[in-house]
Length: 179
Image (cartoon, rainbow, N blue to C red):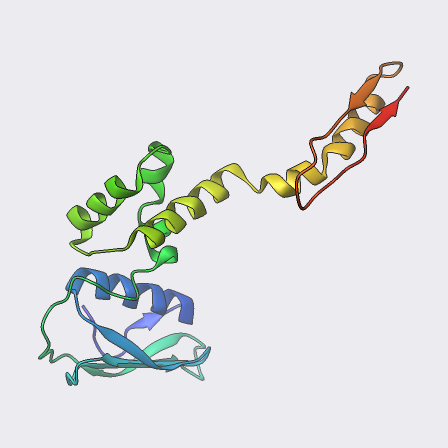
């Protein structure tokens, strides 16, 4: 529930709560003013609903300063604020539990849980974002393979380590041998 004087720790927390509100209430809103120090949110359909929050100079918290609670718009089931970032954070645990979830199953899950229609591309990107956070970036790990070889040779004196990395289109490492 929104009310005047509602306090948030940061503008990012406020934006996240607005996105959750939009997904739960099925309303179409737009951020008229979206700056690091102030955010103004209103309905896109000419509805009088309005929410304005900014940083309080004394407490340095993000506080709701203007709020008009009257909605005169129809509910919607497609929303641009229900994006990759929101879906990845909202369904993070579910994707981690079921890494092989298919995109159309993920779409049905979103429809069932949030009653929102989301495209396949957004679902795919959300799933890939969670998996990338879970697995790490393999390109960065691959670049460190020579460091791994050096550590093996340092910790096991007298051993031999031969590395023949597979060359990718964007990354080629020479074949290395060390005795």
